[in-house]
Length: 277
Image (cartoon, rainbow, N blue to C red; front, side, top):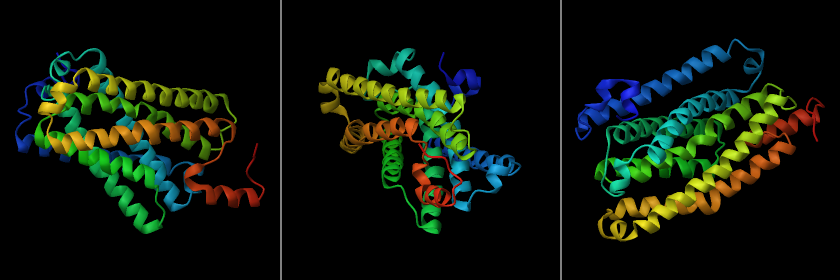
């Protein structure tokens, strides 16, 4: 029994090799996350905090909610792949399961929505996060290649567990915007968030370890485009992205700043309305 059977039994029996099925799941995923974005905007608009944010901060708020929802599913799928899914481990290059297919299709739909939203936002507001953009565009490319070549579902599904930090990161930012950074809830969430980045590093070590154990099979059979995308992304995440984000979130535990909109924080400090450490 796969993870998707707990969502709906029919997902276990779909022909995931069919382009039509893949496109239907990707399209449904894109639509689902768009609806989550709209629902977030509608519900949050009832709060005083949200109504007083600038437009680009409102966009970031809603994207944070979308990322949190995706992060919850990704964590479940990644945990399943690491501890319960034995089929993917039998052949890390070409083994597939209904759960891996569904998760990767959903993932492509999410990153299509995420990259589209970030692109439109960056163009309109002329403000971009280069590291986050690089990570998400490379992830989109990598997952599309995994589906096209029907290979490396093991790495793709286990890699979803890297999103374990996303729900806590979203909660961190929204609590910060609500002026609750001095509360016990925010501090507890921040401690957990920093720890999830430590867990990310362990997961990345696990992926390197599995690469070492299966290197002969990977070198001989893994399609070159996937091999390149996988190890470029894994190298960037392991040596640059995760260490950098771990550092930033650790510093934020002491210095409660909004790193995404520092110009806003500077303005607030000037007006004397922001507490600083």
